[in-house]
Image (tube, rainbow, N blue to C red):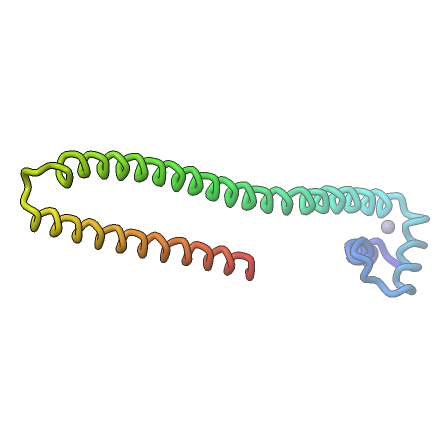
Length: 148
Ligand SMILES: [Zn+2]
């Protein structure tokens, strides 16, 4: 076998794609030819490096995606906690003020109290309905993520 022929087969040898006969021919040549042996050694080194890079690269990308997902979830979780807390504080304060200054006061006429009470009740029902829909669609999204 000539050096040119061997060089062509070297990378196939590294990928374990040679027939037993070709493998034997190349091995015989390498045993007697230092140039091809050196070429083989450098190819082997290159393959090791690229294999290492493949192994390092993939988990890195997976980790980046993982942390990005975690970060998004934490961020949204914190957002929801603060939003809920703020809404509860404002609603409680508003309800307390409304009860004291409006509903327990004798100044506004009863019909105005009934009107505003009905309006507020409707708004609360709508708010709860919208929030419930949001939570349901969020749960649905999470289910789809798992499916992927
Ligand atoms: Zn050679």
